[in-house]
Image (cartoon, rainbow, N blue to C red; front, side):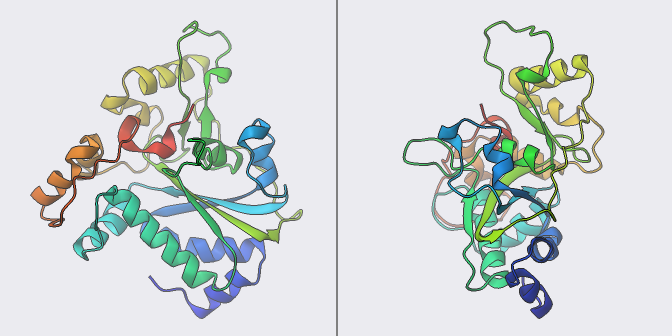
Length: 274
């Protein structure tokens, strides 16, 4: 991965389109999508205890992985011997490529990166991934509040983001914050596409995600332009503690470690929050 001179100059000039273009040009070929937003949009929909500690007009970018990330990024990372230690291999791969992108495209510029699996000392996540994706217009975050008549009583029902083109076949991976970049009127908030508009379909979506998440059927609540490969589905459906053994079986990993980091439904934490 290498940023061109034009990309670097666009990124360090400090304007929203330049930064978005630098990230898009570098990360899209690797199987990612990027969506800029203002910190104020995120903080406006959350309680103060969950606010990100930046001014409202500060630029942030949420990064999503698409199905092609597995073949374009993860497999090459493993084949190059980049996976070491006991941390989740997917997490290692994504951190490697995003960190490299930021260091190459924004040299000398302050960029604070948070990953979906990172926690604060209080044990709260560093950011609420699905909320970020929703306010950025990337994917609609369907929650209990989107159901007019609650059919579940007091039962806890987690919300889930649905992408207009990918359905549930994606994950939210990282948040980039540019503390020195103040965003003006050039960035306007656009609501995410409401691709599950009917009440009946929304109830079905939340029930699939909460009650039958292992079968992955919630991902297909809308037609998807791209889905995970069978190999990728096998990987994500394998318990985290058994994934290193699976990668060894596939001939993609020969080091020590068991990959014991726990995950939530689908083992894609960016698609799971209360």
